[in-house]
Image 1 (cartoon, rainbow, N blue to C red):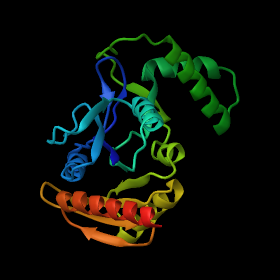
Image 2 (cartoon, helix red, strand yellow):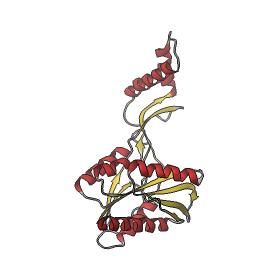
Image 3 (spheres, one colour):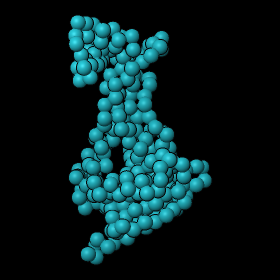
Image 4 (cartoon, helix red, strand yellow):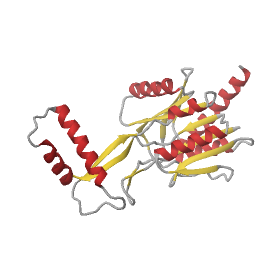
Length: 256
């Protein structure tokens, strides 16, 4: 049995020494990997960020990745060469990547130049801002951005969604997705998690809110596509519940 687990958080480069990341540590992913590796006959491939927590079991196959594109490339390669019985996508994937960076002074100067003698409305101004960013971005040099710039403008571009790739590549894999929100009512959290589940063909989604997570506690609800709900209160409980649910689903599919 083969299991693919993603863990930690992706990072997107600003320049050669700076990046944009998130707070994901990969601790939960490492515990999930450890739970599966307690059983003989289960192989785990662990796609993780460079600094993510890693499973202690030496049988785990570790594949470090960096940004969203490298994650997509790794997922594509793995799922075209190996059949995975289950995918647990716990990684916090960046929603945006840096397209351009420019000082506010340079951007303002370019806008002033392009708008001279022009009657503009909202649409025209939006177009001119994008044009100025494109022009300024094309003039930027690789390497390190000067630390003398007082105000740096970053143009962020939306990244592709990774979770939708798993079922496209392997429709029969058991897919576990994760949804983290911050400070919302449980009803809203469950609605968003169910939307993620239905839109991406997930078999399970772990719904959790950052306000319910600390060093010793991790409140979460594991939703199933059969409308089941399992309430959990620690990372270890989550890891064990995901393993049990996945193993049960695999067994049911074999019998069916």
